[in-house]
Image 1 (spheres, protein in one colour):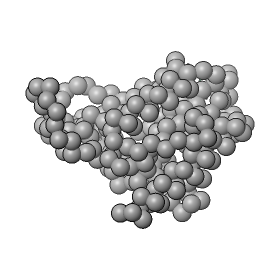
Image 2 (cartoon, rainbow, N blue to C red):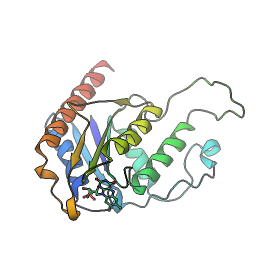
Image 3 (cartoon, protein in one colour):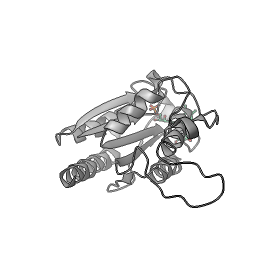
Image 4 (cartoon, protein in one colour):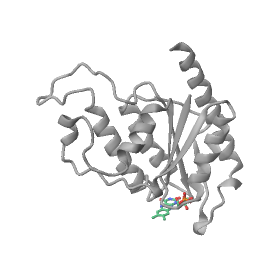
Amino acid sequence: MKVVGICGSPRRGGNTEYATQYTLDRIGEKGIETELIRLCEKNVHYCTACYNCVQQKRCTINDDLEEIFLKIEAADGLIMASPVYHASVTPLIKSLMDRLGFSGRWRDNPMQATDTAYKFKGTPFSGKVGAPITVARRAGTTSAFSDLLLWYTVNDFIVVGSSYWSMLLAGKGGAINAAEDAEGLANLDHLAENMANLIIKLTKAK
Ligand SMILES: Cc1cc2nc3c(=O)[nH]c(=O)nc-3n(C[C@H](O)[C@H](O)[C@H](O)COP(=O)(O)O)c2cc1C
């Protein structure tokens, strides 16, 4: 059992990384392997809308996407975490979401030329457990959270909730102070518990 946590902040060691690693650590305490991926250390270009993935069944841009894709494909759960930038996610995580989602969709499904229903064969992420985390100084956490939620739910993940939306308030004046948001961290504790329990149940049911 493994959970991959993706930190979509351009800032290494910042609040979002803290939130992601904190949640992974709680999941790890339940006996599940975890791995943190810092997008600021990766090269993931934005989607160029070449549509090559429809025929070739993979994204043909030669960068770090494939490495991340394979790690997620091999995992049971995924945490996507983003700082809030103008009430939305960062360009780093948006580029990743676009390319994972679009190229993943066509891996096992043909794109129809006309608007007809197709028999959906799933995505490489089908049945994996997903959770969003957002971090903001003050506002926009819920709209950025929705961006992540919409991505998970169109890509056939099973999304887990918590005692509140899984988000932290931190970063006034650029501060790295996520550890001070006790209420937010308690919500991450519960998110981790839910995520670990669900993965354990799903693994037993396989
Ligand atoms: C370009 C930019 C846009 C931001 N937009 C928002 C915003 O819309 N709402 C908010 O509350 N904080 C905003 N912030 C503050 C960050 O969300 C906050 O400092 C967060 O803790 C940063 O996470 P990090 O430490 O992982 O980089 C913004 C920061 C930057 C650099």
